[in-house]
Image (tube, rainbow, N blue to C red; front, side, top):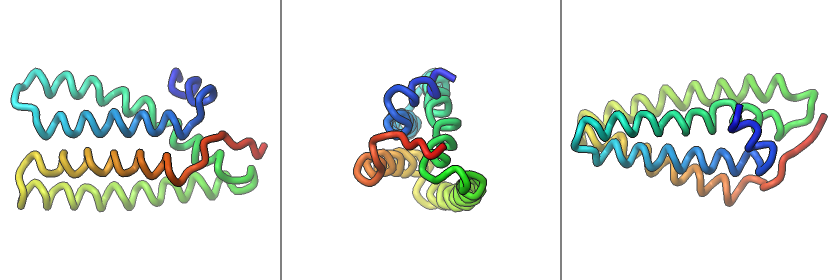
Length: 131
């Protein structure tokens, strides 16, 4: 709920960018962590990523379309995220097997940085109100 309130104030895109930056830092931390306690700290910080992006991403997807297309937008959102989750899991497994345990985390961290940059460059700053 605090992330949703924040997204109403500063924009959903900005909260998403912040969440992706946290994700990136956590994953880069996972790749470099060499102490067990660091992993636990990173898991706690990962919760902020989830809080900042889970509900806000759905709201952002709905904000981008007119009211009569919201059901379609949510269906498309879940379809694309499901397919991409499958593909990313396959890539992570291959990286783990062929490049080592830290490779999927480095890949994920860099991908999150790219996603944050793409949001800033390609997506509008303002919130939409098609209601």
